Every structure is written in C-alpha cells, then in structure tokens.
Image (cartoon, rainbow, N blue to C red; front, side, top):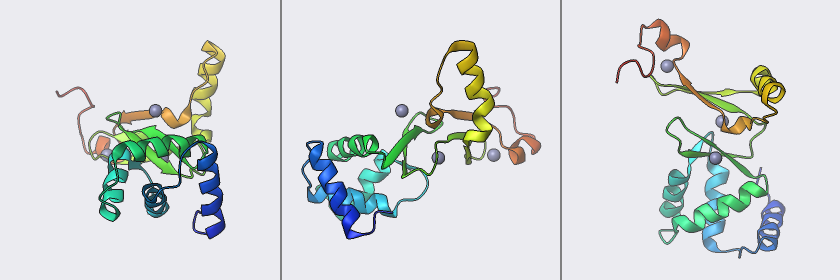
Length: 154
Ligand SMILES: [Zn+2]
Ligand SMILES: [Zn+2]
Ligand SMILES: [Zn+2]
C-alpha cells in the first residue's frame, strides 16, 4: 500500500526521475488512487481529484497515470465499451468478463486464461496481453433467465 510516508517519498523521487514535478495535483491523484478500489475509469479519477482540488486538469491526471503505469503502480485495461479502466497495484495480471445484460464484471485469472494464451502463442506466435482481454457475453444468471444473446436483438 502507499500509506507510509517513506513510500510517498520514494514515489516522489521516481516521478522526478521521469521528469515530472511533485505538484499538489499529483499528490491529490495519489490520495485518490490510494482510496480507489477495483476498477476505476480515468474520468472517475479526474472527477474525484476535482472534488478535492477543483484546479485539477484532466491532462495532468492522464499524464501522471501514464508514468504511474510505467512504474507498475497502476495498470489499465478496457471496459466493454472500450473505456480505459485503471487498477491500483494489481495483484496479478487478469482479464475481464463483462455481462452485457446485468453489467457485471468478473476477473479472468492467469490459470483460466492459460488455454487461450498458449493457443495463440503456439498457433500464431502471438503474446496475449491478458490485462487487455475483455470478453463480453452473458453471465450464468442472465443466460439462464432467458436473456437474448448480445447482438441478437439490436
Ligand atoms: Zn489499453
Ligand atoms: Zn449478467
Ligand atoms: Zn480487473
């Protein structure tokens, strides 16, 4: 976690080494990230930062997120609509299942993804980036409730 003073200092030094000044806006973003849970979109992060510091600009937030991702502190994937979603200090790489009917999301762990990852590697020499795997469909509850397959209606 990022709660100790020393890790905040470390982070400040690492941001500086990437050419980013340690500004109140960046500190605010770190406070917001520390409180975030699960998946949070860039727009939500901007909104939460602005609730603390109305002067926060989206460009500062996104640029800082880029560097934090390089440093391994956040990682982004994509929601069903393609929006970037951020994880704070992801414990392990994972993809996502997204139910088109109820909007639920679940994580696909590395073990579950082994078959698909290995198959693309062997068949195509393609290395799958699991954090960018988002599979849209119907969860068990929704499919047994007789919902239509996604795409079969519209
Ligand atoms: Zn991406
Ligand atoms: Zn569902
Ligand atoms: Zn996730």
